Image 1 (cartoon, rainbow, N blue to C red):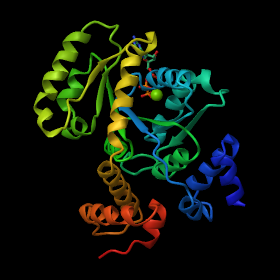
Image 2: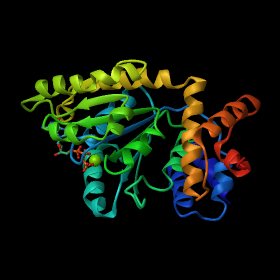
Image 3: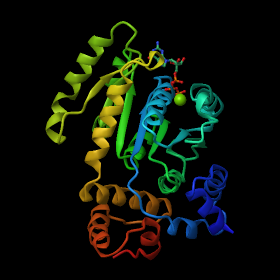
Image 4: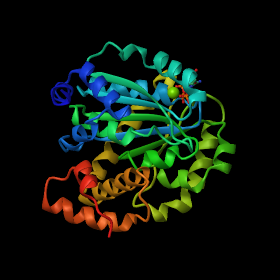
Length: 301
Ligand SMILES: Nc1nc2c(ncn2[C@@H]2O[C@H](COP(=O)(O)OP(=O)(O)OP(=O)(O)O)[C@@H](O)[C@H]2O)c(=O)[nH]1
Ligand SMILES: [Mg+2]
């Protein structure tokens, strides 16, 4: 039964796709088999994170617009890190992205975060892989940057966009070093407000020491999402960054991070991510690599 529904989902049937997502979320019997049969694709995944209310959904809405103009099919996952945020955030997504709900080239789904540390929804990796297989050209994941979220999203996305606002000085002060590390692109949104230029300068200064550890400079892009300003520059930056991510080396790195998260989520201990990376490098040369078949056959040591 699952096979037929999966086939429909991969063929572009959004009702079947929604059902497959529910199978995975609820761990319905047979869902692991379903994952093991997913075809391998290289669809760009963009993570959009940042503090509550920074304008992530408004930016996502504008990005969808550009993707649709480019004749792309786009899937969006909105993840609420805790049930406390749940209703408000989902309502926000609904309103901000409502114009797409009847567009057959746009698929939007909200997932509740159930992670104990405020982490991403437990099945977000698997659901993202399903979306990548389901004939979408781009997957966007929006999540509020609290707790472990931003670190997890970076392990999942080819491009991580961190959204801040001109009043975000305090945020940068207290920003974990991790957030600096994971951002492929910084967006300063709400640049229609005063203080934007000062803040951008300040952010660029903060980032300066990090340049040496990154291969290229991290772009800082000014936007006013609600006025549709700066979105083209953001879209171009995302496209450029995604195109750099598809080297074998980067794909191995992402696979190893995902394998690590999935294995540790299944409570296996003493896993070393460097060993995973070495192992996956070999496996990717040998055969068509499927992460879920790999995990099934995975034996430590
Ligand atoms: N002035 C101004 N307001 C904006 C801009 N972008 C978004 N907003 C407003 O900021 C508010 C929050 O926007 P959202 O897009 O829902 O922000 P979010 O980051 O998705 O919020 P959460 O998902 O709840 O964390 C809304 O009232 C938007 O209209 C902007 O560029 N300028
Ligand atoms: Mg939002």
